[in-house]
Length: 461
Image 1: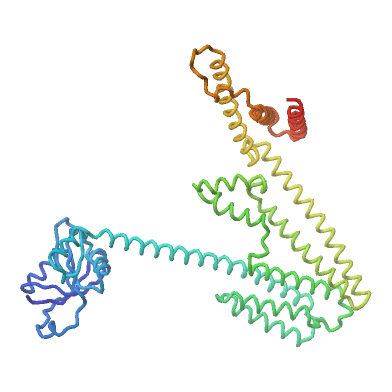
Image 2: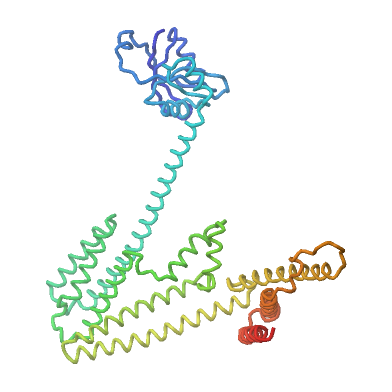
């Protein structure tokens, strides 16, 4: 039967190429048209070329086309799986089975019974792996963009400070020093939008190193205070650049807050094990989210602490008393600034606490307390039912019937202590939650009374 080479376009605007066996060109066009292909070109393959052509393996298939009409035929592909993919993706067939064309009739029958489920599973695994890879790549890209944005903010801050320095002390700086600084700034501006973040960071650090070590002013002795402040500020900016390079400096609390933000707050339906872990860390973290003002104050305190460390180092390394005096004055000013920031942070925390008290929003500790109260209430109810049932059963005459030992629950010494503890805990929580919900003084009274009552019961029961 003659063979025809064709080029067609399917409904998804994919251009497909292949061969088809048909009695004549009109029949070949009709078959392709029934598959809803737009024919671009079709030509008959000479017999000599078809015979000498090195072809791919041929696979037999059966299934349904888009119009739910049964189709059967052969297709060339590297292997059985790629034949299945071509039929599914290019021709949009629903495949019932695919198998090599050179099988015996018995083997073909087994292949038909086996079907194409294993090929479908293989395709799903491949698609899942592709999606996971794309998801991982997308996550890496977002992480990179985030790091790039943070670094660019740091670079803008450094360049802004350097510009302020040049504008302020331009008349007192040597021309050679100013030119070297400007050359380094120009280089940073050229590479600022590069994707090589480490190189950008290193170039900026080189500029800050230069400012620290170079004799910036023409008359250093007359600008001792300016020189000291400049060195400290350069070291602080250097530390900020290095902090942005890795997450190793993140505190445990910050790491827990970040985990909570990603897996609990931003997750509409977190898994059970996430919720269990969140109930453990919630009392530790306290406030679920910090305000922008709190985060800003904390960052300022960190910067002040870093500058104080640098001033202390400069104080001990000072070459003369004048330098020591300047360093001491810097430490004193920073200490006063730190105290002021601490007061602002305490006032902001107090404001949030008061707002939470005035609102109906429950804290994580309050939510946990309500859950424990509910659990202990059900536990006590179950025990009372079981207790009275046991008393009733053991007090009746049941003839020769032997009462099981489980009905003598009231004789258990362990249960006496356990139920006394549960009762006191339930009573204390009930008082606190129902009558003194957000009264801190009540907490200071109820807790020691609860513990003292426990001790009295354990010693006298």
